[in-house]
Length: 308
Image (cartoon, rainbow, N blue to C red; front, side, top):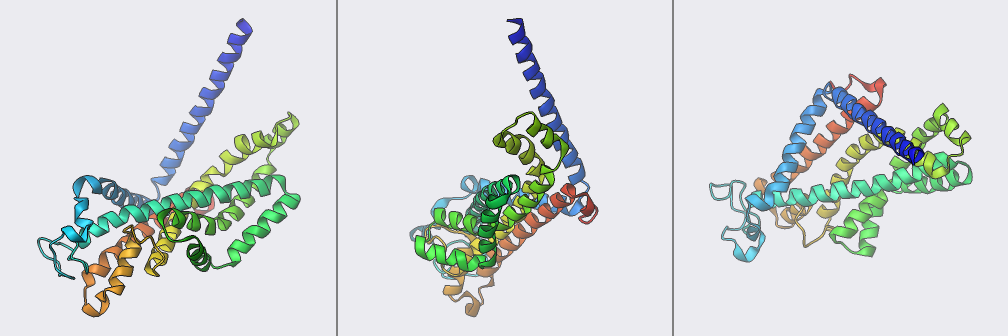
């Protein structure tokens, strides 16, 4: 009984030490991140956009999205009633922009998470096992890299149909290859470290090696890659929606630009219909890029000072 109690105490102590190290690592990461001024600016603006998107259902009336319940005119200029004017159906462009932010961010983040999961899994497997496993996985990644992402996404959407779920899956499937190569290179560097050799000598299995030793050491690189990937996913979703391959039942910044183009907003001079979604895409992509570059500088000491 005492031996069992001693074993539980040792296990609890080991877990406490592990969590303490993780908290210390996070604190050190945040301390270094705060030195990246552009990263802080991007994070501040990004948090504001996310807060607005999350608060939209509580601060706006979703009924304003229904064309049968609006009272505005076609492409009315900005006014007190409609600060950003109206669209071709008389709906408030401000309301559309706020609700469009939710869909654009949702697609960008979830598609990126899917791409990161696939890319990290493929990269770690290729780097850990090597040999034929690495050759097959990397040739598959090379194929996805060679094929233009936009063209591949368009073909897949034409085959599978355009709805929110398929758009997320298509963007994730089309975007994982670069992450896989990055993670494989980092995994190869980790594989040669002494603590992993000791784990093998002590009889640790492949799953233990990859989950307990490889993954924690490549995770900072995964997080930095994730932040940069979100910007690309949002741009890809906006491009697909602008080309008419977005979900017709959802409002995103890309679908707003598509509908503005079809409604003749350019020839009509309705800048208020084109500018808000365009600026929204620009600001969010820039914020994610600034955050990603700052995180990359923290993870890679050779880049520190470049984001200040």
